[in-house]
Amino acid sequence: MGIRYLSEDIIFVTLPKKPHLDNELNNVNEIASDGCDCDVIIDFSRAKILTSASISNLMLLKGFLSALNHQLILCNVSTLINPDFPSRA
Image (tube, rainbow, N blue to C red; front, side, top):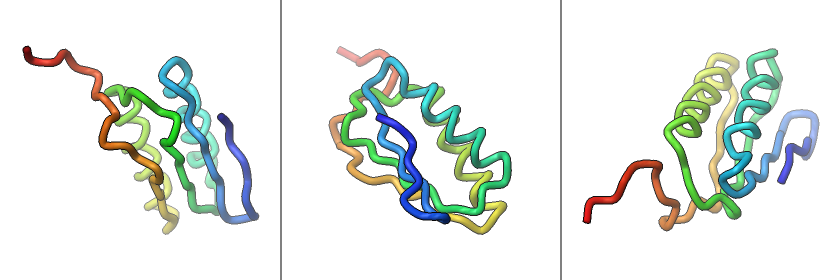
């Protein structure tokens, strides 16, 4: 888990399992909103649940980066990630 700078213009974020997922995305949003001059790659390989707050944070991050002509790249997104709403049984 963590935020690493791969180079001056690329931030690589490895998301943890659910408990701190939103905190990590909040940290990345703070970096982006401060006008970072970089693209952001987010690795979902460890994430098991994607909450509505996480989706909101991703949308904010995409907006910050787009305004600066940078990209948000999502990698290792599993089709098994469960959304944060009750299943219908």
